[in-house]
Amino acid sequence: MPRHNKQIKHIKAIFINNCQTKRQYSTERQAREVADYQMLINNDLELSVYKCDSCNKWHLTRRSIDNI
Image (tube, rainbow, N blue to C red; front, side, top):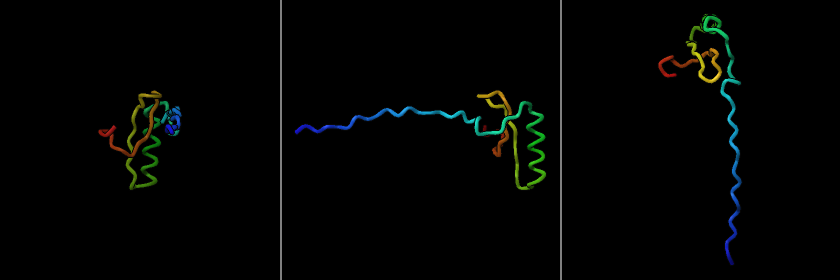
């Protein structure tokens, strides 16, 4: 008796824009002010700001700017 293989259903990948889950700042100045304030509240925190290629807005990151 022949083997009946189940058809593999192609799963449509849904890519969520990573920027939707991040806070967005219109200007670098806004992002830096928020980062500075957060670092004042928590001395162990070190934040950097970067301009996102996807949304053209500014985000905060804990990573060093060299790693982005």
